[in-house]
Length: 499
Ligand code: FAD
Image 1: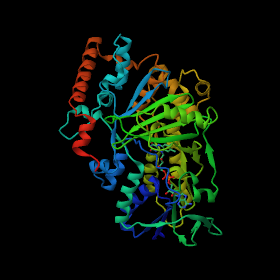
Image 2: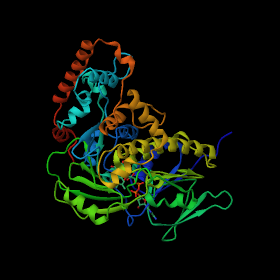
Image 3: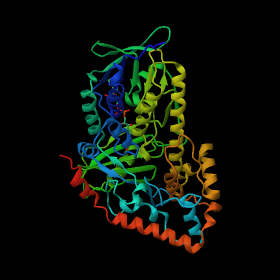
Image 4: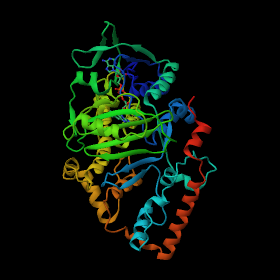
């Protein structure tokens, strides 16, 4: 029997979430004769802060047929090899979360287990020496590997910093070229169908009505359609206490570094994101611990260049909608919940939301079993990211009241189990919906001072001299590969210079 197919999709909101959905669905549903309309209000505008990303965004761009160099140029973008965390464990200390892997696995266990053993035998070289991402980042070097690049590049990975409003504009061009209709208007009301409670139509401030079979709520923190369905919100402030951000760009003062910097402050942290035309800065903080004036003073005292405008205040509650998909409404982006931007995961969650929607795409009746599965997967993804973020706050030795409170919190059981296993023998528990894998957890666990007491016994196979020789050889190959790359700025100038 033929299902009753979805013939019309209405995307409410045109921020990064709305235009990512419009660009992807217009491409992937091209054969399905489905009308896609996006409504947004110029008057309301977008959050438009999302400037840092993680490597899977490459897949999303590839899916859309986006040329990487053209996209970086069009969004004033730069390349991102990881995040430098300054002062997170304690004042004066820093560590790097690289996107690529450490070393190359050999023998029956993970690379870092051999490193742990070598350390126990007296080798004092830090794990960073076996990260091509780290070695390139701290020399300000970058290149996109080609099929001819040395094998060590298989451990290399990158993402981007970009101007989020330019990214939305870029995606809008793609979506409109594929037939998406854009309507400018202020959504004033959401009308539910009697009986099943599905959204029937929305009403714009000028009286126009817009109906559809399926609605995507991309209206940002407002979550207009999701709110109308009253699905509720899980508040995670007890684990992630920051609830405000002040954002301000400043002029560029030098060549852009190929990494994001995150610096711990008295009651939160400050980001620094280098773009081609400016540097993005922001201070994420806990309003219960410091005032907005103190937060602004801290931010402005720590800018590298002349600021462009006044800091913009954003309020948020970390957590998630209880049902990102309910009836015929799927919430994407900020409308579905928010995990603070510490590991640049929000744009990624939009991407996975779109991909899950395509996996569980409904007909017009929106079988609730599809929504249940979507929500189960979305919950697991967000919980895995939440645990990773909580680790940064909890495992600290800083002395301010805010940080002492973070160190004293009761962490989720899932995180406690991971930390306990790592402390015992350096092994990392992976769960099916983990976004961050071994290298990421290793970097943050070790960086925050969580140290294993022992290593995997399977790492004891090589003789000590043999182990030392293998590790030294790898280290040399990585060092040479990083040294041979062009500077990050030279790569941008040659391949992706913004016009
Ligand atoms: P928005 O950008 O808020 O867009 C909402 C849209 O809905 C707009 O078009 C608006 O006009 C429309 N709208 C709302 N109400 C109405 C109405 N009544 N009528 C008509 N239209 C309406 N993510 C990352 O991946 N990396 C980062 O580094 C990062 N940094 C961040 C820093 C901060 C401080 C914050 C708050 C977020 C950050 N994010 C980051 C998240 C990122 O900004 C968002 O996930 C992303 O921009 C998607 O936003 P959105 O499209 O859901 O919402």
